[in-house]
Length: 279
Image 1 (spheres, rainbow, N blue to C red):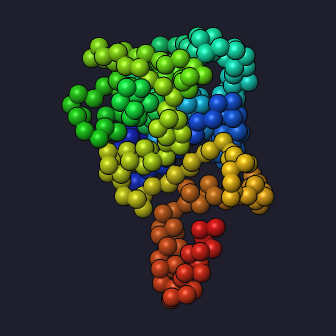
Image 2: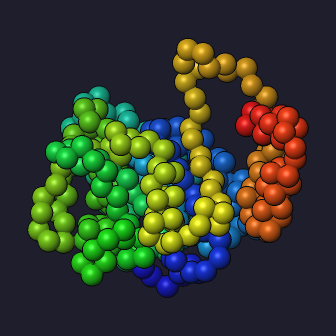
């Protein structure tokens, strides 16, 4: 990992940013991230999050953030290049355009170049299990002595793999540091929302307690046609987002006090308060 503000595994809170897959709906993710970055006085988000995980389009954004890119720059890249990939009518054309774009955007950057902890989620085609590209040995759950950042692959390769939504794209072949050739497909087949993988890194690899975790998980909207799910919901405004982020980044002692106060409420009052909090 390159020199940066965060040393993965350092003491204190562990702040996680998790970004869902969703194709062109990544524009929504970028819009929310712009608000968060503004709250951080325009500083790169890699300076404020210890782990940034992403799947598919979220993987593209996660990789760019981990390299230190500002959100406005990512928005420009999306606006200029997403149509060039999606305009192709066959999977071979889309896959070629995606690979060329990844090479243009990421060049020869490797996972040793990231400025904070990162996880790019792809799916191992043969084993039907996740293959998560990481930048720091501190994120390894085992075999630390043989850990290689990103399995020796470039960030461009990892991003293409994470976005290869077969059969709409072709499967993506990567060659690891030990010479293995592995076919990968879109990480959404394992976890379109990679939050649990990020939490697993924080708890198992970094040995953080659950009370030390602060998680921002960004989806890309919901399916309006899902049976039993109402799309008539209270609007979520920028002010709401601000309150939630401030609470996320607040003094952990205050958050612990809030939880303790809830636990101290007797019987029915505690149940009612917990029910309200879960809505």
